[in-house]
Length: 376
Image (cartoon, rainbow, N blue to C red; front, side, top):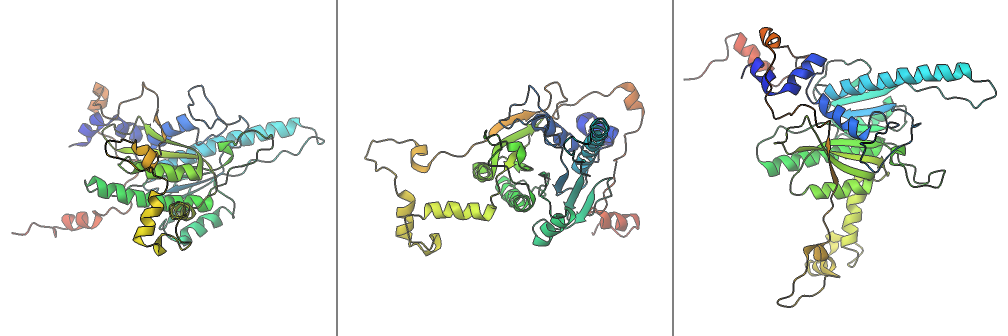
């Protein structure tokens, strides 16, 4: 397939190059933001269907972490939007400060936004973004992020990472789940906890805590992730941007209002709840009989011919609100669009940023040197 053919087949691919984004995935974050106001927590709209509406005077984002960031399209969006918000905040601060008398309450100056992009692969520099070539599963990475933020908590953690898919859905979903777990570990260490006791005595405002966004594959056991996220965040939703192909299992889990719980503690809590009727040593110290008894404790006995809903036996499966993001009049990611004659007449646009260290780089070098030949 030539470049022109792909431009016609995938309009988001072409629009990304026209607008200066390094990848089409930039539109996914933009459409997620249009629904959840991730990059401007103070904004609300009539179309906002989340339960986490925020006040109009909420402070803009100042510290954000982009995990699995390469090639950097999400970091581009974060940098552009946060710098725009900061410039507007500085202008407003100057206006209010000039018009205020010295006897009025001290006005706090807007903080300079800080963005950290982490990936195993090297990334080309992006204005306003600090890049780290590091492993998100290593504890030193968390320490480095916190050091860059001077020990202050982050407002948002995003992750658009995914493994190289094999086509074996169960395997791909499992590897992706491990990647999300690693991202959650980072989020649990750096995110700002929600204010559980608002000053006005009202309900907990999810926007007072940090937010988390990660790519997921909606598989058979996705309800386990929903359950874990529900324990960690005030509001959880599953979102599908318009720029994400409908034929793909890809979606994005969105958590608003970080409660402050650690993933390991949540897992221990679940295991303890199962083994609470057994010995205090946990599941590992239970015999098979005692473990079975602890799991089945409270399950009503059935006679032949009786029926009982599975939810009454095993409990209901966790679920999350599913939201389609993006304007309904936006381009369809699965449709093929006809290019205008003036667009067909010119050459296809080159990528905004060439890969810095692609895995096929060595093969290309050998091919150009005539050293890569077919064996007989």
